[in-house]
Image (cartoon, rainbow, N blue to C red; front, side, top):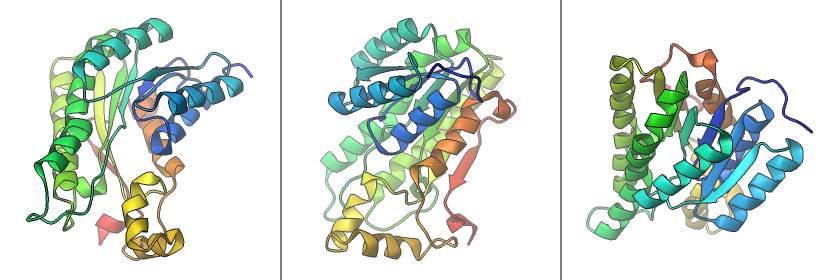
Length: 263
């Protein structure tokens, strides 16, 4: 099948953390809606398999790169390769992120904080820094940063995750204002999912004795819609923010939380 017209036809998109979960859903949706996508992940075999899957459906739409998002050298290499392969870059989706063990302050470690800082926050700055010249050249352009409901509402035992995701939320607003005031025509918004059915829920499943159904039921109790989300629930929002449909939207946060923060 060849690429068809769609909501992001002609867009060139780089998505980090794309080997599975949210990133995989975003990449598939973008390609199906007309974009060419660069998918990156530290897991080389899985991200290459995703690109092959996309190209089997939409010929020539995807390129894969092994990528440590905490490394500035890797960002420089991957951005250069993606721009060359895609013919430019008009959308950056900073999706890569990690959780950590549930740890209260007296048991927490600096290693836990450092890892989450490097992957959840430092990567956002590095991606924006090295992508921005190319986004400006391809304007109208968009940066979408994946934060979390945990960046807006705290929970005990999640200090590092709460703090890094909150920082992503605020840094997104800084980027949005810098780009707007400089007339770059590059928008920047953050997306804040609640519990989504991806491997990031594994610690909660472990706490439920390995019973996935029980874990999901417990997590859904605090959500007015009484269920956890699916990856496509987030991908649809990211697709909107990548498209020109959102051309007047910048510096905003989008809650994909089943009504949780409305309570």
